[in-house]
Image 1 (cartoon, one colour):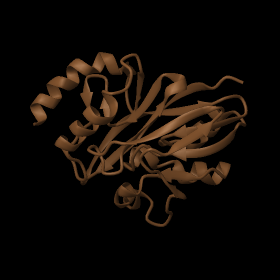
Image 2 (spheres, rainbow, N blue to C red; image 1 turned 90 degrees about the vertical axis):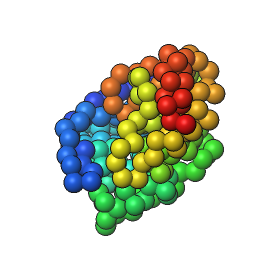
Image 3 (cartoon, one colour; image 1 turned 180 degrees about the horizontal axis):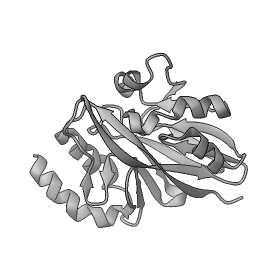
Image 4 (cartoon, rainbow, N blue to C red; image 1 turned 180 degrees about the vertical axis):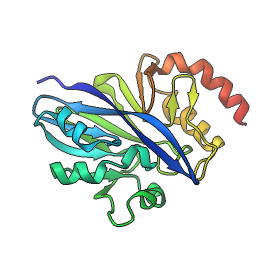
Length: 209
């Protein structure tokens, strides 16, 4: 069976540093008709479970631990038995949302996860959050960037645990080296490509250093 990417949008609240904002999140499901992984279990475990359609969930992969990307992860894990995977540098953020429930396993830079014959390579891309990661799937010509890279530029760095020069370095060092036609599937909003974002990124890089 051929692997595919399913897309679900869920809505909820992003909370950090005493503020709250209504947000729509992209939830990405990578797999075939038998098995899948979920990238960012946002807001609605029941909706994500329904979108899985009875497939075996192999893992819940967190691109970072802001609450709007992980709030449904424990419930989805409980419903499916799938482990929650997070880079350990984001544990302080994770504990703000789930103080009594730890992730099940760690993500590491260079690690490769496999589902439905597709490799997802973990790229540690700190800046938006210390443990932010992107997931590069060469067979699908896609990189899942969470909140590291959006259509039009880098993710936000104006709140706790974030750092603008670091996110610029992450994008320049880890994402601009991918093939220009690589589809960038983001944590919020529309998709883009590495090639389409490169001119914007050069402007951001110039501003960041």
